[in-house]
Amino acid sequence: MINKMLPKQKPTDFAPVNQALLNVITPMGLEIKRNSLVIGENTGRVYGVVKFPQKVDMGWLSKITNIPSTVVSIGFKPVDNSALITAISKSIVHNRVTAEGAKDPLTRQRAEKAAEDGDRIMLQIDQNGETVGLMSISIMPIARDEKSFTKVTRRVDSVLGVMKCKGRALASLQKEGLQNISPTFPTVGKIENIIQRIVPMSTFVGGFPFASSGFNDGTGYYFAKDNSGGLIIVDTWKRGDDRTNSNMVIMGVAGVGKSTAVKHLALAEYMKGTKLIFIDPEQEYKELCENLNGDWINAGGDKRGLLNPLQIRPAPRDTDEAEPDNDTPLYVDEGYGMSDMALHIKNLEIFFKLYIPSLSDMKRAILKQAIIELYNNFNIDWDTDIKHLKNTDFPTFTDLHTLLEKKAKTQKDDEHKELALLFHDLALGSDQFLWNGHSTVETSSLCICLDTHSLQNTGDNIKRAQYFTLLSWCWEQMSKDRNERVLLICDEAYLMIDESVPQSLVFLRNVAKRARKYEAGLAIISHSVVDFLSPSIKQYGQALLDIPCYKILMGTDGKNLLETKELYSLTEAEEELLLSKKRGHALFVIGAKRLHVNFEIPEYKFDYFGKAGGR
Image 1 (tube, helix red, strand yellow):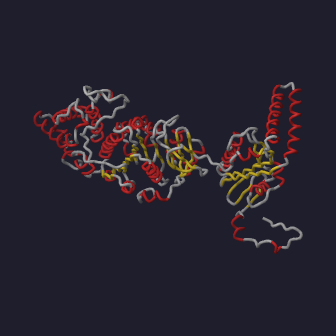
Image 2 (tube, one colour):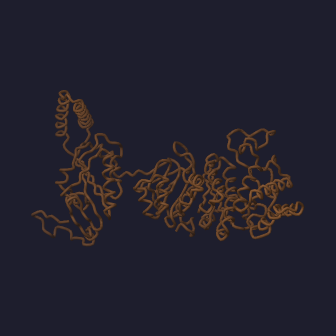
């Protein structure tokens, strides 16, 4: 920048040049071309807006100033109202004469519209005291490479076109355009003469150029910030329009900030009174649970974290009808007319398929008969009211193994003998620590962490069977009280998928569908959508990705990005956001609305998160 001195001033009248500041504002390199310019490592092009729409909405300027990767300059210079009124008056008379003499309907219509607009503006200026002025808008898209620069310039053209503005590249005036748009240089008369247009002050002020969109449900909690810095306030339990449930899906490769985002959301839900249940394979939520005085449960073999798969759990009611009278069995109109015991035996069939995938149909039928007989031995039948029984009233796998051995001796058949051998590990071997015994899990807090870290070194059949058992218990907690908000957070959800036995995934899909009826929500967290879209399980896995009204899609690439793009119909800009894999940034889908969000989390929350993951 050149200092200009008036004739009577001496060089000593000016402050000395600040070299440090000069170095900061001076670009590393500057190359001026006819239609563009190069500033350091960036390519730019200065546009001037030479036409504005006749009618504008509140905040219209913010749509121009918030275009990503652009620099925008807006100028406004008040002018003499009397001269303008005279010019408008003459224009009105001219347009009315044109309208009366025009034979072409289109010409007549345009002239009449121009005359009406002139009347309205003159009324605003003359009678309402409206101030008018010359407004100028310059836009400079910038990018590091040619491909990105082309995308940004197209985006600028698109936004201006949608707003019925007209942008003009300042050919052969890029240097003057850069000077005009720079905060370190005064306005350039040559550029102002090209782009200045007369507008009322209300049009300029009502444009709110520094406004950002944001999102606000009116209730809820701070979720994140949008790409313009606007606050996003979300109430995940709000219903209406395209938001029919409180389910979430969080996807992204390792290292993009999934754990931090999940802990941030979980803590916010906890502060709102929501009951949290974590299924935690990597011990990432243990410290958070302990800091909230929650119940941390080792679900990988600890005697205090044992869930008895043979314990029948009450089936939730899906109807809103009143409770039946005392003469009506409780299971009537529940679960399509099936009793709690009948429904639980269906769940046991899934458990045994997961635990012993090689079990033949004949052995499953014999095993089912033995289980029914076992329940009868414990005075439990199809009509028993399960709600009145305690944990110790149900049989264990020791009892089932004893019964199978007894039948093998009395009936002397190979099937019972083989079943007794298969279930020996459950009753007396290493797997007894997971499932053999009466249920010991007891919780009383609003934060429950089911830690499955110690399962990771076991076989796939052990993991999947235990996850199914945990999900069954979680569903009981979610469905037993319709007035209590419960959020089940399944981390590393791909561990629950078994292509050969999809029933576990079906169960999870059904939880996602039914949770809204019980004021509950399901959060699925995983690295890749590909895990859920294998052809053999796609009809169930895709539902888990489609059903949630809240989707947080973080950085990813490769095949996973292609599948995500196809599944959620991503735009080019949304695909670019995920491909950048910027830590803490995500595409947030709320019903049909999509936002680029940045998880800027308050420092105090990190004191609760702990050191595992999310750092």
